[in-house]
Length: 246
Image: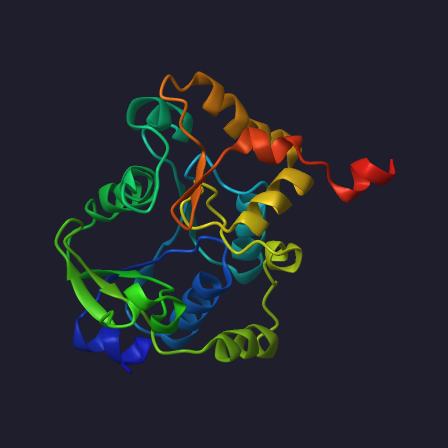
């Protein structure tokens, strides 16, 4: 693997944009990159994209971490909201993931393209996360942003990520402790268990999906899990333990 310092020197990177979603991998990738490249002639902007359908509390956590570590944070937002996009394209699913480009990638592309010179997006992607990432290269050129894409922890294991967080005393993302891994709740990669946690822990936030379903003429479901439709309204009808014993 190519370490951050060697990558920056070899590719003569002048601008680096670590993308910090609020998850463990992006936290570690961002911290590792910044610490390993200290002393180099490099301008670093840490990017966080508010997709307009983020888990409640994520942006506050990201801002708190960035402030405590002295990171230069830039919060980006898409041109339109998740709700508006759903009404136009329908709910996203794995075979039609319009949400990823319009809500997450496009704001980063537009921002990064403003900088002239050799530049790189720093990503927390890892090969063992999923089969579709198993052959992901550590370094690629992203033509859309005219920038390199660099994954400093591409071959790290889950254990290495956890160990790094502990050894460096980094603020642990709190949502993992309640069983939620995804910080963007578009529903494409969330499990049914995670959806139940959303409904129980963030009821007002979850009702946004129920309301969106009611506006859809096609009667589409907000979520798709294992190629199966899951309606937000059905999950909302299920009582939580607190509601049962109340």
